[in-house]
Length: 342
Image 1: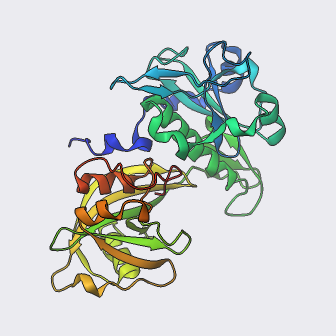
Image 2: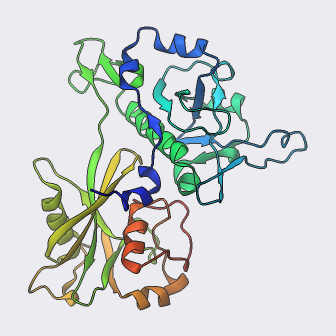
């Protein structure tokens, strides 16, 4: 099965061997820190640093380092540190080995993420404006850096919410290279989880798409409808149920497109298309009034004509990729929502 659509999704790209067998090596992080070739990705409040060109800091400027991508454009790079330059932290994550030669890191470089507290982050880089979140840079990063940042953030978010045992409430401790936690009382292990969600492009008989505005957004911000998969439910059943709950419409023929991790904080989005079921009329849309406040149908010409009057999903989102696939190419009009959504 070709993965041409998935390859277009910024957070689905990767060029890191997660090297799962190494996670069980005793004294792993002592070994990694003793290896001068190891590189560390610092994480502070969900953000990290971008590399700078050598010699650009002395005059007070911060020109970002970049490398050539396959299409000839220049991309920013993550700033990876020798382990000696990053203080040891309570939670460190073994991310694996690079599969690409990038910057000063050849293929095979072992990669670690370190979750920093405020004081440690300020020591490493006191200028808070230089710490960047994933959504603002995801679409510009290389395959390796996009995958590395996504992996690290997803794992960091899991640790932030699993400091205690779900069975007895006792504190858990990190083990397995940062890929599991163990209860200090009953000895049970907890492993990282990700929450599946479906996101759906609904079309009517005229090939128009349905976009909705969420209650938490500006009233001119629109995206595809989406929702979490419930226990004991298939992805296809979730498509039909969620679309009815949010729009009042029955859909049919869910077709899977591809998936993208969305670590904000812990989801994976499964992209689908679906059509209105027989007998359903486009005019019958009924926003649920709680999560979805407005629903609108758009043809391609109507979407283009909307221009700056609506805000579409950001370029890091699977929603943007699905809409652009239906549209027939990149959407260059309207505000560019850098932060994105889903």
